[in-house]
Length: 277
Image (cartoon, rainbow, N blue to C red; front, top):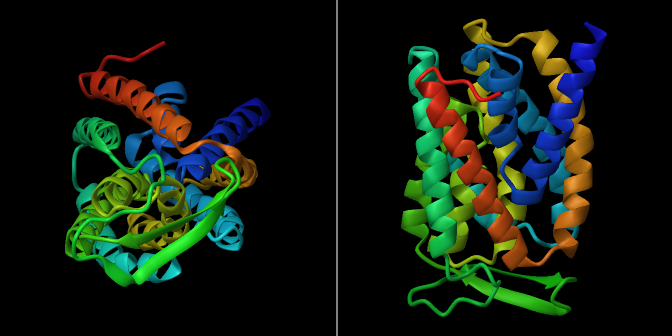
């Protein structure tokens, strides 16, 4: 029992580190880890992941806000759509058969990897696309580049629509919505990757809390899984936020693509009942 507890904390620590590093909330590691390594029911894993996303956001948000990576105005705007989607996603999740959640998870990961590969903004260059929302503009100092980065936000309606979908995915799969919102803000809205990560971390906690309430009401939150994962995620998230500021955006983008591609294959196979390892 103690060994299982410690292993869950270790898994969650890694998940929290990666979640904070990429603005994803940790669910991208935690859900596959719980289901593939600990044979946890996928809905219990999703519920525990949503709890951990709240912890990740709480731990990371203050650091990113202090570093000015977070665009607070944009985050609050997008969150109105994301929260609505999270309610819908949570209600769907408690009624959808588990195997279909694996397929859905794999599909979302493929989308995220392709979006990031096609992104023209990963180098954190200021955007010059027409019709920018200058009221949502932002700037921050990038320690890795040694310069101030300024940008304006574009394609806000598309961002709102995508955030609605991110909310559905967040509650349905327990991944905080960052897997959609980071590529969406970076590739579609013209926001530099570090600003997208910081803004995503600022908002994912609210999204996850919305979905977690529905899972709790339906009895899918197991405290013996949720408690150790929340502890590990808190520790890992604090470490991940420190690394992000020093990492180069192109390196973050490449690591992101590799990570989600490998995980997508594992989850797709699990949907067919094929276990790895």
